[in-house]
Length: 350
Ligand code: COA
Image 1 (cartoon, helix red, strand yellow):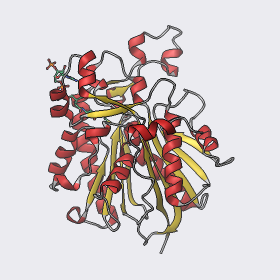
Image 2 (cartoon, protein in one colour):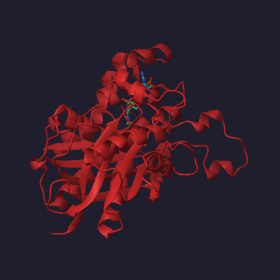
Image 3 (cartoon, helix red, strand yellow):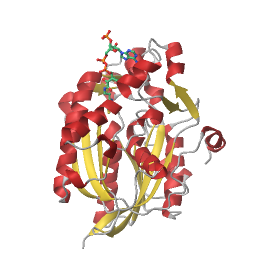
Image 4 (cartoon, helix red, strand yellow):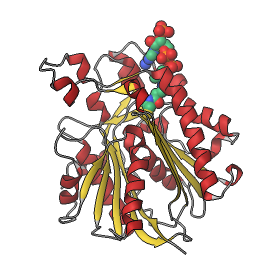
């Protein structure tokens, strides 16, 4: 029996502002029919003016702590690629706003794989004995990075936050994380990028062109890479865990596109209904995508204690990664993202 990081709490939160496909079709050359057919997305939530990734992280983190029955943790790891500011990291402010005291707190940037990377980092802190409990948050307000006239990105992304609490436990108990597989390929870093604003552009001394300050993506190549890398990573993790694909109850993959989930299911030879999906109402929420899918899966009853679960992410970098666990029994009362009216009263609470 080895020491392991065990999932002990879960929370998710999305901002109150709903943006429907029809609303986007009023300002972009697109349609509800195209977006649904090509992505599976019907609506998404976007932050309102002044609201930030840190706000989403605080709301998600608060719910995960409540679900774990904890008021404090030993460390905070925040996965985000849309931090509140370029410098410093957003995690220390999130930790302070959650009343967690002077704990170590830092950001991890791996775009849509960010949550899996952060989970691995949190699990590593626990395994080393450096922490007994860790809050791992994935949060992104990607709507703030999108060009107003770019129909290929604007229809895809939603904003949100999701979080889990890890505690030290044993490798044999439900919730223990296992089978880690992580990877990257920097030769394809241009496929998903915000070209301007970093040291490479700023050191030129030439002011950035406005269009270079927005997120860009080469959709078709990214699509093919996402299917291949997530399928391979899942297989690796299942093998390392000593399971086989047929016994996995729930595949919880990064929610990039409903067609990507279906293609991974085909490639792995598993039924599509084993792949949890909340993309219809959430869109692609980047680092929040996997924990939000977990929270929505628990709320809908599709994800149940005892399920064998594989988590898998893919994103810019390129990066990818997977982990496995048996889903534990958690206090689920705080995992449901509130409906718009309820959320509106909670936004921005310290
Ligand atoms: N509405 C209508 N038409 C659109 C559109 C929109 N919102 N976005 C793109 N199109 C058009 C394109 O301009 C293109 O037109 P053309 O043939 O006249 O040039 C056509 O639709 C097909 O474009 P294409 O890029 O081939 O579409 P697609 O089927 O690949 O779907 C994505 C585009 C972005 C939905 C898809 O590539 C995708 O999901 N990629 C992966 C995204 C992802 O996972 N990102 C995050 C990774 S972590």
